[in-house]
Image (cartoon, rainbow, N blue to C red; front, top):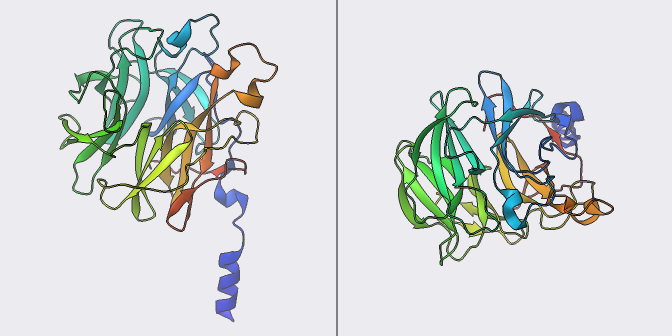
Length: 331
């Protein structure tokens, strides 16, 4: 008898209150430029809130020529006090690097031994194309607001962006990034014993063109998600070195809900309480741009969807309600 009752309990739907708060669509829009992209989340130990750092593109500024609208801004910050369901704009990160027109893109943040480490893509100015030099710099902070520059990383080329940093089982660190000069695939990696000194190792996944890599551990495996401009490619590994690609991309097809009706781009993943959430951005094109002013499709919004694990692969359904419950201090 008790076995039958247990089976019924296990099969019963989990109440929404236990699954967390319902996340809105969009999850967040930048109130300054309305061009939030490339989100990365970190738990703020002092404020006891989740912080989201993001690239802030000048999407709502009219008459900017060519690609200049993706240049010339600092990293924006949003904060959540309710486990990731509600986000409020919290200003810009104070990063004392370069000249006022320098461009800050695609941050990565690691919290280790009481110090926050940021790895940030830098473009030295405002440009009308995508061909300028780029560097990845290392910064540290105690409060996630004011940052100290530590170094410019010496990697494989003069055009490197989109760092992702993950701690390996032996305690060392690995960084994946996009090398825009590469001919053997754009995703490269470097290793470090201490988050300060980095050694370039070369190509990470041969033949793969993509950007915005994100590595995390979940369901007994390591996963790498990359933006391949047709949704997000998913790779699986047992040792964070050799990667096998799953057949289906995530978020390749446009969603059906307002503000989420284009493919998903450049994502972060937070694993918390045994569950995993994918934070991504979606341009406001397609149906979301109908009847809007010219250039509306430049605007972008941050969205979230919960990941599912099925038969060795990752899936998600952006068209279903997402309940979110990020626990304090996890990532």
